[in-house]
Amino acid sequence: MATPKELYYEKRGQVLVKNLQSRHFEAYYCASREAALEKALALIPEGSTVGWGGAMSCQQIGLMQALHAGDYRPIDRELCKTPEAREQAQREMFCADFFLTGANALSLDGQMVNIDGTGNRVGAIVYGPKNVLVIAGMNKVEDSLEAALRRARTIAAPMNKQRFENPPTPCLITGTCADCRSEGCICNQIVITRHCRPAGRIKFILVGEDLGF
Image (cartoon, rainbow, N blue to C red; front, side, top):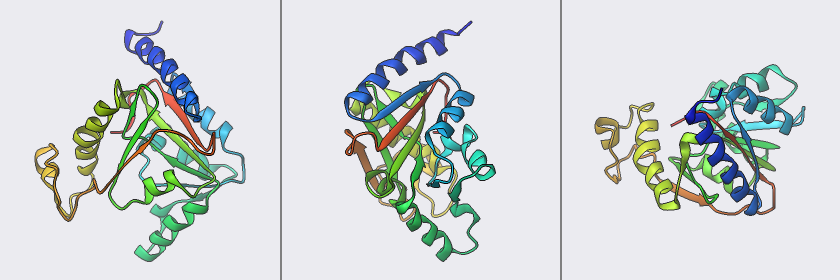
């Protein structure tokens, strides 16, 4: 029997799916990370080149592991031996068949907010890869765009910064956004994706679990 939280996520998920589709995104709701993994692999044809940035939600559903184990051509910057090779891999992702990412926040009316430090992730979302696949837990969904922006700045970014000790930032120390201009700031680009053109290029799999930051 579904829990109240599971029912809450499913009902909000169905609303969000419709609102995303009205903005010409492709969108699906999966109750579990296992179902989300199955759906993701159904959307990515075998033989595809697939890249990703910092995609914690994709990792949590096991998508990277499945791509490495299957008949795909992953572009994995974490396997690069030098900074130059890592930079080259990130540039190759702009020509990939699929780019995988999470979302820092979503508004219930179907808009996505992402914050980036170097810009490779939001750059690929905006333009380049033939397809963008977003894996997002329902914990990322807020009632309004204003609340989604606030979540991205005050929850997602400070939490994500805990993975990167250097260079330090105020939020690394306090866990609270200080609207800083520090050398180590990871809030250098803030992108709102409100509509998909061409239609269907960006695909969402909403997951009825808490994923990512």
